[in-house]
Length: 361
Image 1 (cartoon, rainbow, N blue to C red):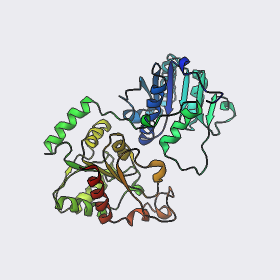
Image 2: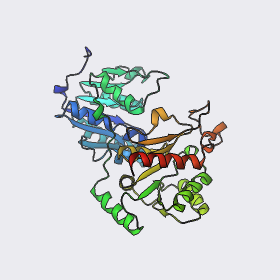
Image 3: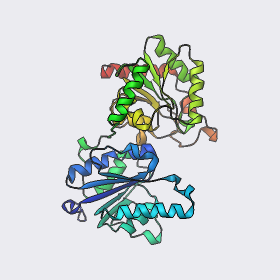
């Protein structure tokens, strides 16, 4: 045991801060599971951006979810200040014993100073001289140490003397009864049954992570030609919907689509009932992993070791180019990633068949 391990018996309330994107927030879900396993008496709260809250709401280990709305800045200086002060007041009323700050965001550093917990842990980093002593514990992020993001999050707990059990590291995502009921009706209207369709989510907010539309159309045609039921989804973003329309225009047979028609919780329910999920490095892929839906994922510029499907039966398709993962927005900044265009539809189809045979679906 570390000599500066915290006394979990004295921890009554914990605030976990993750101010990042949707997938990042979902990948913090094991932190709550592990904390609850080691401190079942403690109340565990989350602080996330408002638009990412559905990634963590209804988690059985989470007591309350507090949010920061990125739209507050549109309220003007006074309106934004009033919203910030109201949040701080609500957080202060919780009297946290421990804060777990999972990004290098300085907002977490000054919130920790204001909330004055007995213990606070954050990753190593430059928070500025004023906030240098905001945290009682720092955990290292080793340069070049390629580990999954889930494990990096759990390092915060390891630094406190909490060793995560293997069975507590799974992702948790709960669609909820309301989303389940709405999705059941939408699937019935499309003539689809739970467990009977392959869900393909071909888009991403970062289009350089996506497969060429002609490759995706060829894959879908190959699936429908052999009698598979395919359901398409996409976020209600104009660029993603435009890409989806380009794919549909190339198809020889029409396929069902709920693109732009689902909330995040409803998307979770649709993924949960799919026979197989097909996508790329994006939040729906992480949702599929959380829901234990077998997953085939394409990875190009992003790192599959850090961001791959977590603890779910899967196949991961990459092209062994020496430059990947580069993290760039396409080769030469041109928005098109050759490490994705070189992956052929036939290879994707073979990976899908192999995974379906493995899971017996």
